[in-house]
Amino acid sequence: MRTRQTPRTPVRETASLPDMDSLSLKDDCARAKRFCDFMDTSPTTYHAVHYLSKDLENAGFRPLNERDSWEDEFHTHDKFYVTRNGSSIIAFVVGKDWTPGNGAGVVGTHIDALCAKVKPISKKTPVDGYTLLGAAPYSGAFSDTWWDRDLGIAGRIICRDGNNKVTSKLVHVPYPIARIPTLAPHFGAPANPPFNKETQMTPVIGLTSSKEISEPTEDEKLSPLVGKHSIDLLRTLSKHSGVAVKDMLQMDMELFDTQKAALGGLNQDFIFCPRIDDKVCTYTAVQGFIESVPDMDPRALNIVVCFDNEEVGSNTRQGAQGGLLESVVERVISHGMDASVANLAEEYKRKTYANSFFCSADVNHAVNPNFSNIYLEHHKPQLNYGMTLAVDPNAHMTTDAVSLGFIEEVARRGKNKTQYFQIRNDSRSGGTIGPYISSSTGMRSIDLGIAQLSMHSIRATIGSKDVALGTKFFKNFYELWFGVDEEFNKGGI
Image (tube, rainbow, N blue to C red; front, side, top):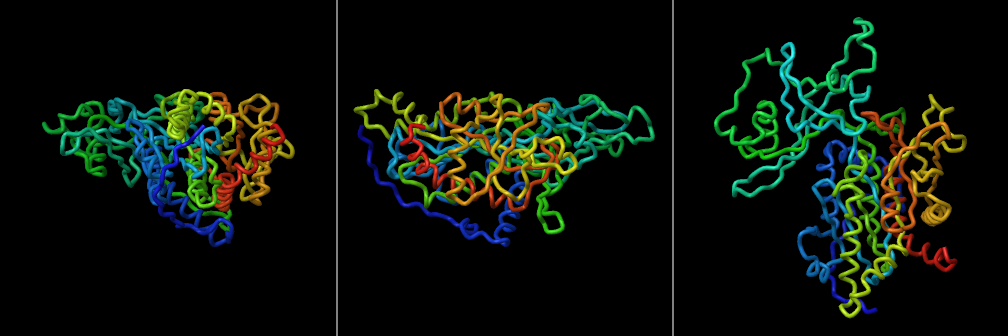
């Protein structure tokens, strides 16, 4: 098989963060603070994708549109990223000596988090002078941890611009607009759970008795959203997005905890933060991917992909079952093949996947000292230690002996520590994107991730060093996986 040899223009490398091989306590703190900035400015999946897109562009990655041909771009460049629906993102680097059939080193994460989704018709009849907002829990939201929290609103608006072109605009109102108030314990039994999430956990967003009820103007009535949502809500979104109410066509809004991420603990050992699952693995995987580019094996294809909708099953076009990863890999393979062997595209696709390795990166359970007996002995992940390797005998995770041996060798060469987690026989295991991707492609796969406390709470905890440790682990994976795979292949594994 012949491959196309095309010149590529040099691309600018950025190094906005310290060298991973000479990390110091000061560098750990700088990385932790930048992660906190990412979390504070990325309350929704759309904002997180936008933030990471800018990081990739600053590192010389070029955006591609799935609707367009990529051939001209492939002839002049080697680093790209693609977004789908504004809520999932994939980036890849084609090594200068990569050919179809050579494998890909892939890290996959999910970028969505527990939140509340504003309903398509959120306007509700006022109750006792209160303005209420129709919102639905996304996955495990509206748990007990959502009571009495300052809830903000953000998302995207589908709108018309000044040229009558349909586009989208991100919006993030910079203050809390909602709250789900508890009932005081003085009322006895009604104050005790369980509570009805539809009728007793409705967010309060204002007072109808504090002023006259607002009416939309004739211009505002041009928007199909008027009448479906409070006009005051639409005007608030308009003020902070720059989109006139009359130009709003549709919107996807989320409610979330507005309390900022913070370093905590006597020695700042912790990061206290909302939406850690799974934005911490997403952030560190992308940063490690970017920083690995200068030292990656030139024979490799390296990919990072961050999917939406894992928390609700991944069965959407922007989720892990939507084919985004497979589509990108197949388009790269198609470009790399000479026209004379194009009929062998399926064969080289299968060979590429067989030579690839996939890391399904999702948060794991750190040991909680108040419930130490709930954890399996010798499987109690610690904060600020290293990557946790997740094992499950019932295939909720993809980890097996081959992938454990593989990733532990990668970790050893990169001087990264690892630890194990497996759930007890009397507890229930969660799921990841790993089984979807490995079963659809045949790639060898492992499930791993950064350990956290309080998974699925509105606010959780990780170690402040785990951002740097996670970034270094993923950087080393992208640099080392191809060489480790050569040794496994020689042994027929």
